[in-house]
Amino acid sequence: MHDIADLESRGLPGVGVASTEFVQAAAAQAQALGFDPAMVFVAHPIQDRSDDEMRALADAALPAIVQRLVAAAPPEPAA
Image (cartoon, rainbow, N blue to C red):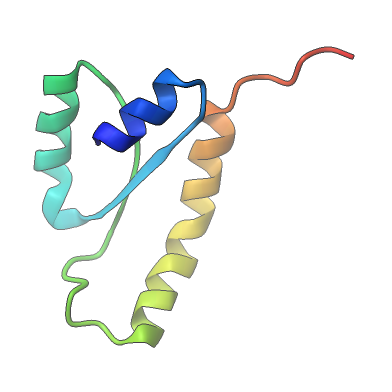
């Protein structure tokens, strides 16, 4: 959460990715920081998943991550 807040403070969009076990913890941390980060949550647990299962989780989460990054990105300057 601190990393995303730091990126955002520098004008760089960021997206937090965590497992669903950490939804409440992420909300509490965001509130404590006074920050509303873009977040994507994947199915929990992840620690015992195989490499193929982790790739499948990442592949499934990628569209939501990209969507949140694009939504958070500052507009391009006019030419």
